[in-house]
Amino acid sequence: MRAGLLAPRRSLPLLGAAALVAIATALAVGSVPLGVSAWADALAGRSSVGASVLLDLRLPRVVAAFAVGGLLALAGALLQALLRNPLADPYVLGVSGGAAVASLLALAAGAGLLGMQAAAAAGALATLALLFALARRAFFGRTLRADDEAASVVLLTGVMLAAFAAALLALLLALAPDGTLRPMVFWLLGDLAGATDLRLALAACVALALALAAALKLARPLNLLLRGDVQALTQGVPVERVRRALVLVAALAAGIAVALAGAVGFVGFVAPHLLRLVVGNDQRVLLPASVLGGGTLVVLADTLARTVAAPLQLPVGVVTALIGVPVFLWLLPRR
Image (tube, rainbow, N blue to C red):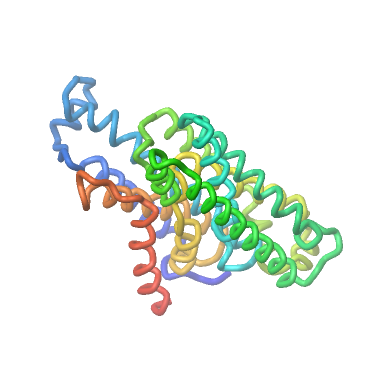
């Protein structure tokens, strides 16, 4: 496995500390700065404006932001490893596009937030199921193909599905009435303004923990799959079963993320890349590192999105790209 810039025993604690700092900063910073008294009131259960802002507004949004970033980064890391292709992520493969189409259809039909979230999760699963049904022979066939050929078939199929989803989204936006056009556009760019339910945010964190645990259970077989299907089979890896399980984990992670925050792009692509440069390509370390890094990235991006142009709020997906691209371009030549 390729070594990273940091030893694994150091990287995960450092990333965990960075995540905690980002979360604390996000809770404290905003149009209403919160000092020690607001934190004390919240911890003591006393009612105050600061405690209400902290517990009812910022805490659900920050928890949801971390969950969304972690889920997208986990899905991206799994898909990149499964396809052995650095371009793979939920957006390139059309998974997030399918979720967005289903969610906007629910919005156009008059569904509320829960209806949109359920539709997004169903759309992600349906799109990924269609992707691998179309590319079944290449990816799940019992007759082994060359690794590059199988991955290319799946990737190209996903790109076509993403293009089809983009066309459907453009059609929906063109037909949308003026009153719903702005919410649709913001949702497509990624928006955490509606993340005000702490129970849903905590449920997403539980889903993130379960998805990561399931992925880590298959991290060793995934490491062997990175070396090729033939070598994995000779080492006793049930290739088809492992792929199916990890594809399901990636689809559920992407669907839950889109359901919570809309189409937050770029995180599933860049976070695993950045962390692979730092910690190496051992999936036992890379997967939890990607979760921590992706969650931290979205928390910081959302903090900027709601503060840099306050009282206006920017789409968080735009900010993730503005942060991630320069960092990635700066770090890549130094690897």
